[in-house]
Length: 628
Image 1 (cartoon, rainbow, N blue to C red):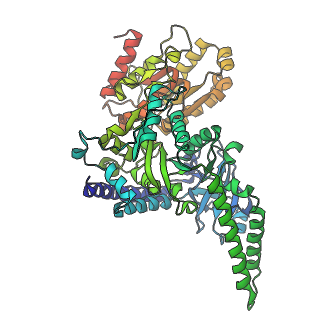
Image 2 (image 1 turned 135 degrees about the horizontal axis):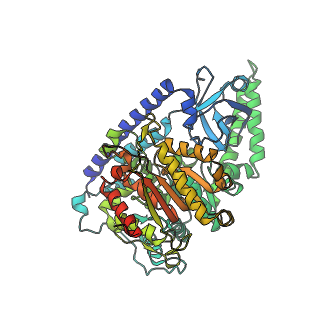
Image 3 (image 1 turned 30 degrees about the vertical axis):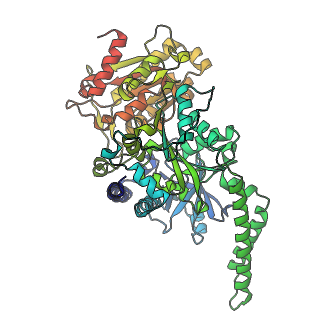
C-alpha cells in the first residue's frame, strides 16, 4: 500500500480545491459588484425588501434576528441552515458583520448575528435586504481536513487514506477489502441484492459501498444496515452532503424507533423533524430553564456593569462556571441517549462533536460530495460505509480548470475504481415501467438492473408508449443565451412542451387526473428555461386546476424525486451541434429515471444526436414506436 501515492493524490485535490475556492470567491465578488439587485433576488440569492421581526437569544445562547421576505415570494431561494449572510440597504451599503442562517422556513428566516451587531439599527432601517455571503467556512473545513489526512501517521486515518488511494497497479487482481466472516443474515422483507448489501456492510472491517441506481431502494437498504449495525455498536455517525438528505435518512430512522440526534437545523421543517434536533432537545431538557436564567443574569450583569465594582468579575466568573457545568451535563445526557448522530459532512466539524469517536460512519449521497468534504467526518471513524450512485448527479464544481483537473472525482468513485470488491449494486428497481428503465440499465449499469414484476408494465393509458421523443428539428427553433448565470432558453420549445402535456392531459381526462392525483415533473437542464416554463404555466388557464400537481425544476432540483409523468425540455438547438453540459450524461440519467409511467422528451434531434448517447436514446424510443 503506497503512502506516497495517497498523499500525492490528496495534494492534487488540495491544489484543485484552491483553484475552485479562488474562482468561486472572485465570481461571488464580481456578481455582488456588477450584477443588479434584481438579478440577485431572481436567482434566489437575496431577499429584498425585508420586514424585520424581533431579536432574542436562542437555546445555543446566540443573538438572533427574525426577518420576513415580503416580495418575490414564489422564487425558490438558496438560503439554508449554516449559510453566511450579509445585510444591506437599498443603496447597496453593506453592514460590516456577517450573520449565519439559523433557521429558514418559507418566507421566514432566523439569522444568528454577533453580540455587538446593530440590531436596533437593522430593525429601524427602511428597505433592508439580506444576501448570501461567500462561504469561507466550508472551504476552511475542507482544507483543514485534507491537511490533517495528509499529515496522519500510524493511525486509523492514515490506514484508510492509504487503502482508499491504493495505486491502480496494486489494486488490480487483489482483494484488498478486509471482512469478518459469518453466515449471511436473512432479511425476508428485502430483495436479494438489498440483503447482500446489508450483509456486506456488517462484514466490512474498513469500507463498503452500496450503489443504488434510481428506484432500487437505497435509503431502505441503508436504514436496514444502520439498524443492524446498532445491534453491534452503541452509536454511529450518519452524514450526507445536503441537509435534505440528512433529514430524509433521519426521518426514516426515527420511523424505525431509533433515537436520532440531528446536529444542525433541518430543511424539511415539521414537528417530527424538529423533535430530534439538538436545539429542540436541549430546550426540552429539565435543566434548561435554570441555564437560561443564569445566561440572562450574565447578560444583565454585563449590561449594567459599574466601574470600580470589585464583585463584578467574581460574580460573572461564578455564573459562567455554573452555566458551563449545566451545559456540559445536558450535552452528556443528550449524546449519551442518542444512537445515531446525524449531520451534514461539514456539520460534523461542529464543536458539539469535539473529541467524539465512532466505530462506523455512514455517508449517504457520497457520489455528490467532494472528496475533501468526506475527510471531515472520516477522522472520527474506524470504518466507512458509502451509499450513493456515481452514475447520477456529480458534485457541483464551478471552475472549469478544477473540473478538468479532476476535482469532481469523488472519494466514492476512487474506491469503486480501485476496490471494486467493496461495491454491492442494488439490482431491482421499484419505480419505472420496464421500458423506461431498460435504456438507463443498459447504458449505465451494464444491464444489471431489473424491474420488480409488480411494476413492470405500469402505465396510465392502455396501449400507451411509455417513452416519446418529440423532435423539434423541422421547426424554425433556436436557443437563446440569457447571460452567464442563467444559461440558455428556448421559448418556442417551452410552449411546445406545455402543448404536449396539454394533449396528454386531455387524453387522460380531467376527472381522472384530479381524483388519482396524477403528478407531473417538468425538467429542464437550464434555470432560465425552468423560470420561463413556470411563468407560462401560471398564465395558462388550462393548467389552473392542475397547478398543485405540477413541479417545474432543474435536473438537480429533481434529484431523489419521482413523478407519474416526466416531461423534459432539452433546450439546445443550434447548427453546430453544441450541447454544453448536457454532455454530462449523469444528469440525463437522473432526468429520464424520474418517470414512473410516462416520459416525454422534447429536443432538436439534429443538434442532440451528434452525441452518441442521445443518438442511441432516440433510436431506442423510435424502436419502441416502431419507427426504425
